Length: 196
Image 1 (cartoon, helix red, strand yellow):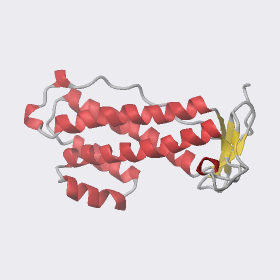
Image 2 (image 1 turned 90 degrees about the horizontal axis):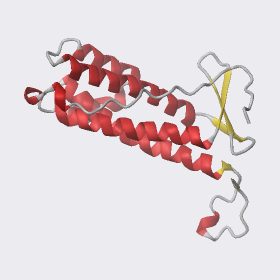
Image 3 (image 1 turned 90 degrees about the vertical axis):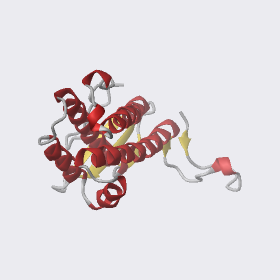
C-alpha cells in the first residue's frame, strides 16, 4: 500500500492530506474504528438507560460526565438487583464486558502516535499512566477486526436495548446470539518484533 503523503497538486481534493501520515489502509481503518465507536457508545446509552431505569434524555445528559468504568459499574450494580431472567442479565453482562474491551482498544488506538512499518504494518505508541512508553505493531486486518467487533456489538446492544425497553415482555428465547468477546489489543512496554 502506498502511504498517504506528498501529492503533486494540493488544490486537488483527492490530494489531501499533502503531508505523510501512514499506510492508507491502516489510516482508513483507524477512521472506521473512530466512527464505529461513536455508534457503539450511542447504543451503550440506550442499554444504560433501560438497565438503570433512566429516560434516554437523562442518560444522554449523564453519560458524557462519567467515565466508562463508572458507566459499566452503575449498569452492573443495577443488574444485580433487577428481577429479569438470568439469561437476559447474562446477555447484558456479555455486552458490557465486550464494550469494556472495545472501549479500551479504542482509547489505545485513538491516543497513539503512528509510525509506518513494514508490509503495511504500523507501530502505534503512547505513554501509559505510569509514564512508560507502550506500543504495538499492528496490521490493517487487525484494525479492521477491531472496527468490525464494534459493529457486531453495536448490533447486539441495539437488539438488547430494544428488548429490555419493555421488561414485562422479556423472554429468554428472544435474545440474539452473543457475539464472541473481542480480543484486547496487545500494547507492551517491551520491544515488539514483526512476525512478517
